[in-house]
Amino acid sequence: MKFEAAGGVLLIVCALGAMIWANSGWATSYDELFYKSYVTVGFGDWALSKPFILWINDLLMAVFFLLVGLEIKREVLVGELQSPRKAALPIAAAMGGMAIPGLVYALVNMGHNSMNGWGVPMATDIAFALGVLALCGSRVPLSVRVFLTSLAIVDDLGALLIIAIFYTEKIGVDYLGYAGGLLVLMAILNMIGIRRVLVYMLIGLVVWYFVLKSGVHATIAGVLIAMTIPAKTRVDQARYSGFVRSILDRFDADSKGETRAWTTGAQQSAVLAIEDAGHKVETPVRRLEHSLIPWVAFLILPVFALANAGVPLSGGGESETAESVWSSRAMWGVVLGLLVGKPVGVFGFAWVAHKMGIGVLPKGASWRHVFGAAWLSGIGFTMALFIANLAFKGDTVSLDAAKLGVLGASVIAGVVGFVILMSCGKKPPQA
Image (cartoon, rainbow, N blue to C red; front, side):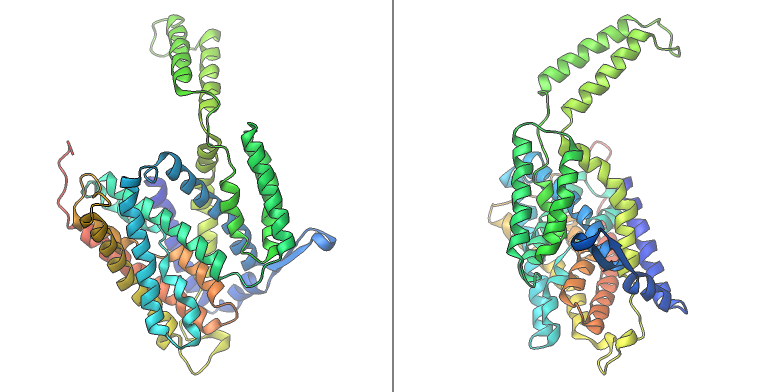
């Protein structure tokens, strides 16, 4: 929780910094750095030359989506999404949280060029949402955090499908075939017991290149790669438990009875043996997920926020048109989608699923907790900005308007959700 909250604070700082930078006297340098500076990697036919912003959105964000894919895989195999009855409520809530905001946006933008942005208000930013949730302390049961996390993971999965199906312009079947072949190879390596994460990451880098060249958005490669990472331990739990207990007995047997003393050679060997056993019982999926969390929280997402949140408030920047950003249907579609569609969709679908006997309320939670979480799901920062970049490619005014809507609505949704959750009665310590 502290990790998530700290990452959320850094995101806020970078987003505010981007807004100030893009609306200051140095706004030109912002555009020059992120949109007009080209970075070339590779050589000959294998060279990739892209603006800095695209390296951030295509490569760095693929690592973010790799982490999302690992979280989805873990939740499905051993987490809250493993049990159909436990999973039913967050899945129903996520479906409502995607369908209703998209419908609200479509109603606002029906018959206009901005209609393509219907996917923008459908996403939830889990880092921000959990950061706000952490500020509520003991007033919110842990089960609500699990509910919100599961909801956001299903939400991310839906967003990935939307990106792959609706925001992919043309597909290069040959490159897609190469990527598919390498993914099959990675699956085979998993099956035969290859567990070194580095092997999968090196092959995965080539998969990312082929997916990028195929026309499918490169970030999809991150999720596909995550599905091939081994999720089983090298040793079973009973064997690990028995081994560690026997080693601890040896460690204690060689103790001199002092609380602070140098460990003996035998004790040092015991410690190393326990470390090695712990490495073998930990799954590559979990190990990779843990190693990526600080990089994503403290580097990738802040850099993404800095590069994408710089929206000129004057109304169009270099591409000013008669339609002001502030009166744009794209902006109001996003705002209403996140502030009306999200709470109504998440809470409404969860309530219906519960009444139908499909899902169960999180343990120790009330409907006020669920309503507060529904508002927090309206924080659509990272994924919403990402989809906006895809939806309004080449349309600067609509893109700026959508970004402004995402930023403003996310702040309001976070504040309202926080107030609702803080109004919940504080739980007694034993609860």
